[in-house]
Amino acid sequence: MSLSGAHRAAFRREAAGEGRVYAIRDDGGLPAPELADGRRTVPFWSKPTRAGRMVDQVEAYRGFEVMAVDVDEWLDEWLPQLEDDGLLVGVNWAGARATGYDLEADQVRQWFSDEPADDARD
Image: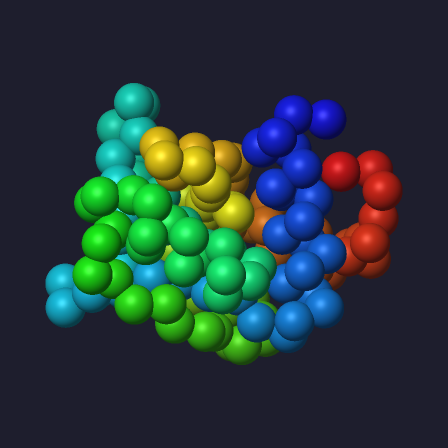
C-alpha cells in the first residue's frame, strides 16, 4: 500500500473512531487549492495532530487554525455542499507538499455508509 493509500485507510478508521474530522481555516475560510486538472479540493484530516502538522509544515497554511467538525454534520451537510460546489475532498494530506488522495464527496460518503471503518480492503 502506498503512503497515500495508508493515509486514506487511516482516515476511514480514525474519523469513525474520533467521531470528528478536522479542517484548517483562516480569515478567508477553508483552503481549496487548484489541482493540475483545474478542479479544486478541500482537505480534511482524521486527527487534529495531522491537520496541525500541515499548518506547521506547509508555508501556504501557516497561520491557519485547526477546526473540528462532527462526522455526522460533515457527512450530512458539508459533503453535499462540497459536491454541489464541484469541489473534491482531500483526505489526510501529508508532507511538506501536502499530498494525498482527492476524491469525490460521494466516494467518501460511501465509506461511512456501506462498510465498517476498520475494513481491511482499503
